[in-house]
Length: 150
Image 1 (tube, rainbow, N blue to C red):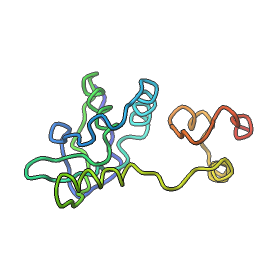
Image 2 (cartoon, rainbow, N blue to C red):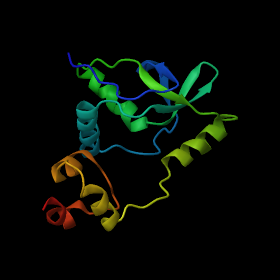
Image 3 (tube, helix red, strand yellow):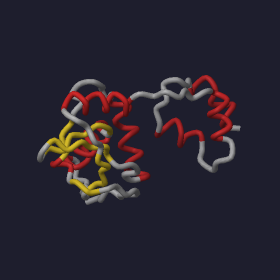
């Protein structure tokens, strides 16, 4: 049995079974992106706490839904998933929690080709590390793969 590494800390710990999704079907996770996320979790472990709002006894996930879904599938496939770090997020009520969820999933900054190049150029990871593990819809990895792999 493989055990997921936890490589971050949070304000508290929680089991997968105690966490409830708040976003419903707001976002989809394609099979391709599920595999990328699974590969990332296998390789790097659980890197960032779930953002969670407590509503009485319920722990509602504001950010981390795709990781939650992927970890549940990994557990079904025989992975041991330990208690995971959570960061508590304050909200006045259910509607406010959903509003904060939308804030969490908003991406205000945009990755540019030049910005990505400057970030990537002084690293020791390979182009395949990036293409294989990440999803950045604003970048067309295929159009400039050769430029960055040199």
